[in-house]
Length: 421
Image 1: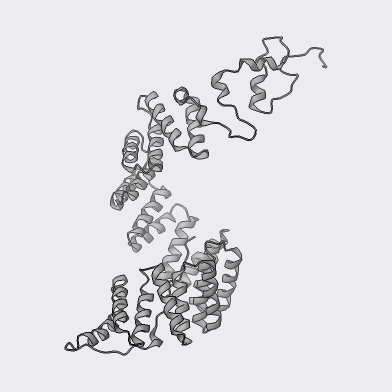
Image 2: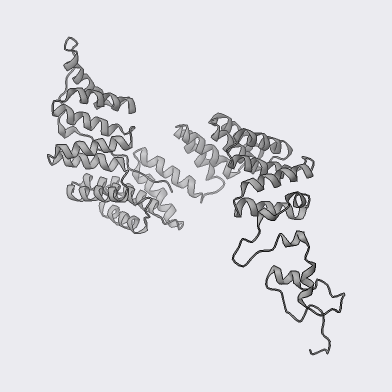
């Protein structure tokens, strides 16, 4: 050594692991040389925190949670590790309960953590009580959001909306509360109010991706593809480049009659697509191909969609329509039945199968399928007219206005699978 003296704790250098740190002398108040003997005095509580090279960082089974629950500097860190990293809800719940008792039920943070544990376990009523208690002690944005999630799980959207209103009064301009209220309105089908809340978000954050995407989707389904295209291009300028965004831009360009740009966007979407969403991209390409009159491209696209996802009911329906146009009646019927077995709510498949059966003289099957179509979509005008036509065969004494429906009136499933960003 340069100074001529050897200080305790300098011979082994800096400890690289927790085991080395425990085995080295902790202070410089002793002249005892560094040996492995100091490792004999490892305390039991510290030994439970040791980690093996190939094992977990902390073994929760060896922890005495009652001891750590009473240590304010360690209990919250340990809870976050168990809850978020280890996903150990049982030990997290036990630690939160012990810590709540140690604080004599005066710490709202631990009540919030108890509510989160109950929520993860599916005990929504217990979670509701904990979040309400925490909200009484301390009004925070997280407490409002967590309690609203519980109300949504309990199928109480109106209670969630009322809670969001109180939260926006306590925290005006909080984006998460405004967006949460917009989501609930959208789930209830009140799209106009939902769009108002999303537009309100722009007063505080003009770069909110969810608000821009939702307004763009609303404009698309409101027959305003040009305005929707502006929203999606804005997301593209902000650096959001994924499959859903290019898919939506491609659909907007198609309905805005920009066909060359539409196919380019779909090509980019295919390059970025994963196994989960590539079937929707191929389905939309087939839908675009039908719009421009390319039946061969449409047929291949729907087949590729089914290869990617064998449970894609809309692709089965549209592929059956193309098969019907080629005169392959049995193959078309098989595709229609496959679409119905996958999705009973797809009214196009019921209507198309009814048209096919009526053309072959199977009036009984046609009558059953057209009634199922009206159950799925009561306001479908073509289904009502076909039902009136079929009733004239079964009830000839009653006169109905007749309108002959041929195979050329088979409807395509045109739900555009407009994916939200």
